[in-house]
Amino acid sequence: MLLHIPGVFTKDEVKALRAILDRGPWADGNMTSGHQSATAKQNLQLPEDSPEAREVQGIITQALYANPMFMSAALPHTVFPPLFNRYEGRGNFGTHVDNAIRQRGNVRIRSDLSATLFLSEPEDYDGGELIIEEMYGEQSVKLPAGDMVLYPSKSLHRVTPVTRGARVSSFFWLQSLIRDDADRESLFRMDVAIQRLNIERGPKDQAVIELTGVYHNLLRRWSEV
View (cartoon, rainbow, N blue to C red):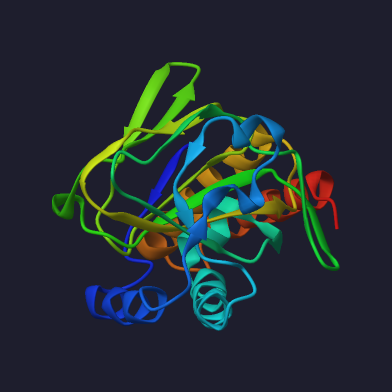
């Protein structure tokens, strides 16, 4: 499931994050590449142990866990510390698939989901679309600053060349409590439906109570903790 999550950060919050990131020591983006990615990647990346990266990592992680749509769709077990990249001067990232296992220090995850949080407005750069290959064809993603896209890490994807301006974003992976994409999507859709019924009928409605029970029993059956 490919999901657009709007408004993870407001415009003012994005501006504050960019003020921190823009003064960081940007370097060759291949510092975190696997073998396949290293042959396809042309961008800049903020070293993950830099003070700027660490500061914004904490802000983003806190915002993710406070975002209801992200929590419902991802059902996160562990979120890998967010990283930051910058594309300009025809920088791009050719077609690739993300590594199945990501590790940093004591944090090791199975990458079930990948995410890109856009930190540049789409009108500020040309190109830079995130192209994600799905069963029903290619999906082109270029979102407003502060919005995020969430998609299965098993998907082939690429970033088209940036021919004007600069595309700055945060990207990261996470291990979900639910390994299977289809099961995770079913739980998300059920949760959305339950929330809608809860608004329309109230939390004491019998259908709301029963469906909530089904949701949690499926979560209990499918989750890996």
